Image (cartoon, rainbow, N blue to C red; front, side):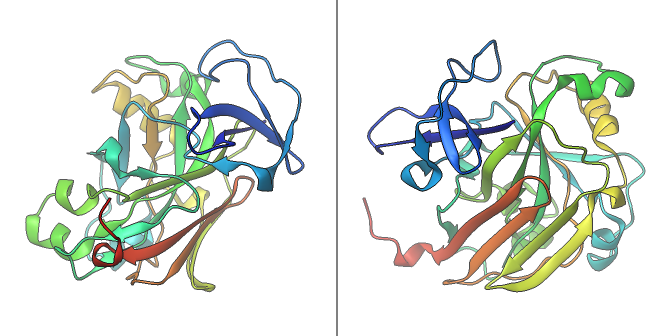
Length: 260
């Protein structure tokens, strides 16, 4: 099933829904609990899609594809490298990534996202997938010059709008070998398969839950493949994962955004 979160009118409260063959209908309750699918009411073009989940925690993984570690001239990690992104980084499909004035080198990083449906602590890898609601797409936008300067990642990955998320959560997807790509202005920048991950999704869930409790609604960004590159004002970013869809976001400089 494809879970979406949407509005008909931007002044209304967001609605959890489901999408099938270009039609959207509401769910009776949050997909993190007990719910029913209600009637498909709208064409997809009639609704405003939001990030498909408002996460509790955003947990991200660094250097989880060997060729990305190589292009950054760093070693492949022996254990997962984890970091957190602020909730204020999240934007939905069609929303703009804002380039901060503090950075001169902002880069794209397409990633498979795991959405936790059932929380837990000390989750065994063998049972890890039982805790997964589904999968979606993110772009772990990074101010690379600040990352290299700071020698840690909070500032470089923590700017508002630096976590585009969507367009839907796919609950029935075998992510062992799916194509993951990123295009900028139609030009292919990143292309790989999830089979290239250093640490698998079950391994990541087991490792993270040995450190912190995972709650329903938390998301895990599982790392980016090689091919990361600079994005500029006016670019259009298309992050795509086979079986999930395409997440499109324009890029704009903050100086071009009028004050509220």
